Length: 240
Ligand code: SF4
Image (tube, rainbow, N blue to C red; front, side, top):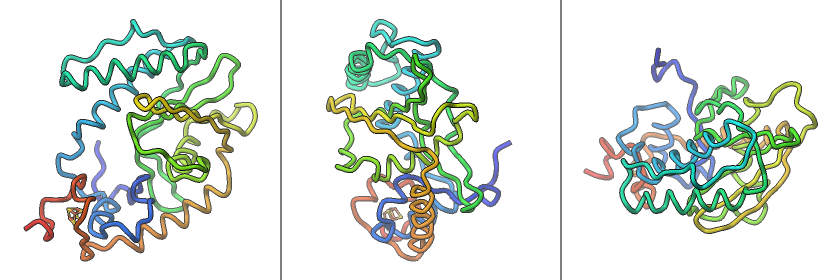
């Protein structure tokens, strides 16, 4: 049974943690309060990205590398999206051609952090075990802005670290997880090793959640470029 707004813990996303004081307070407040979103969730870019990630995950139901012949552009996508699907899945197969891996069950979209009284929400990352049993996370991107020079300290990677704990088995070897960050359109690739129980990430998350709560204010409306991707345009006084 679906939980109501009140039953859910306040919602934190990676986007909300990016300098919240500079974001629209209304948007943050409505998102934090789990308020029902408008239809923005059907955004085409995310639909495509979700499909690519889901199909790549499927290719790793067994320990193996993905093969381009397994991927067929979904017919419910637009022609341009189908082309992008082909480009990205081929790029993935080329990039990870000699790196067989088997996918773990995906973590939930929403991961509770009871000690902070929030839940972390975002697309489930691709978490795999390689042929040597080492844990690897493949963060696959589709023409997105670069993360920044110090990858381990970016919001994306820290948010990922805070979420993947839900997928770790107690019997895994070693404290480290390899994170591969690939943009399948821009042909960029980086790799870092992270400690999923890094206490710096806990401190960062605690401070970030406090900052989001402070900045979340339904009466503080800030019209700007955020509006183009806002799920709360209906009812917003900035657009009357
Ligand atoms: S539409 Fe713009 S001003 Fe209104 S809540 Fe969304 S981001 Fe804020």
